[in-house]
Image (tube, rainbow, N blue to C red):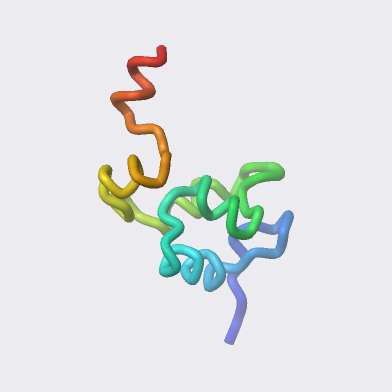
Length: 77
């Protein structure tokens, strides 16, 4: 079985990202908290977003987890 690396900086594989997502990490920030992927050069963030897919978490789940919503970001601007 070949390993597909998502984050070269920290050696994080696609399988590891998928496992963290299955365990409840549904934003790139939450993946970063779980395994550091995306926190160095940032080139893997788009690949992480693609793996997570759109709508990986509902808006309600994100609010409960303390993630800012688009409306909150617009108000802050």
